[in-house]
Length: 300
Image 1 (cartoon, rainbow, N blue to C red):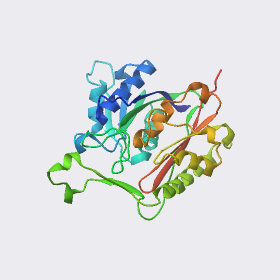
Image 2: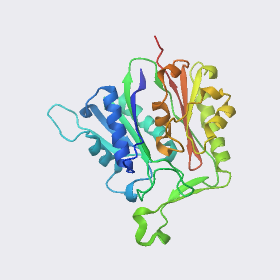
Image 3: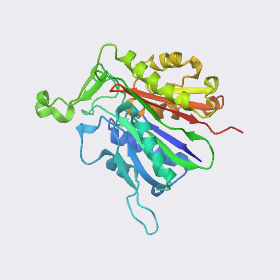
Image 4: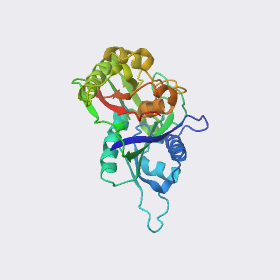
C-alpha cells in the first residue's frame, strides 16, 4: 500500500494575481486530469502563506474549496468534504502529505487535494522583487491510496538553532491604514547557506532511512528554489547528478509553497522513466526543512 500522486495541476495565468483563484484553478486542473468529480475529494488542505489582502478569516482553504466547486452540495449518500489551512512556509506541502497519509490510510477520505500558492497582499505583483521574492502562482496535488508500493515514504524534518534565516510578517507598527496591502519579507545575509545546511540534514535523514537503501544514480531531486542555484547546490551536496535536478519549468523564480508541486507537474513522464525515486526537499524559514523519498511506479 502506498500514498501516491494521482494527478497535479498548476496555474500561472497572468489574468489574476489572486492566490485563491490560482489555487482553485490548479485544483480544478488536477481533478480534471484525474478524471474525478469534485465530490470525490474528501479533504482539501491549503498550504499557502501569503494571501490576498492579508485575509486571515475565514480559512483560505474554505474559499479555495468554494472556487474549485468542491463540496458545494450534500447529495444523499455522498460523504461531505471539508478543508483547512496548514501553514508552515516552504515545508507546508510535505507536512500536508503527512496529514493526508493519515487520512488516506484510515480510509477517512478517498482523495486528498493539497493546494498551495502565494501572492503579494496588494494583488499588484506577479513577479519576484527584492521586497517580495516570490512568484505568484498556484499548484495542486491530488493524493490517493493505492495497492502498490509506489508513493511517499516517511517525511523527515530538521531545524537549525539561531535566527530564522528568512521570515515574512505584517509590521503592525508601520502599516497604518494600508495593512491589507503590505507585507514585510526579510532574508538574512547568508540565508542560502543556512537553508542548504538544514536541507542537507533533512535529506540525509530521508536517504539514510529508505528501506533497502537509496540508489542516488536512480534518484531525481525536486527541491525548494529560494535562489536560482539552490537545487543544483543541494544536489552537489547530496551526491546527486546535476541532470537529475528537476526544475520548475515556466515558473521563473521562487514559487515558495507551490515550488515542489509545480516542479513535479512540469516533469515529462519520459524523464521520470529514467528514475526509480524522487527525493522531495523543502527548506525555508526557521531555518527548517522537510524531505521525503517518493517511489515511482514502475514503467511498462
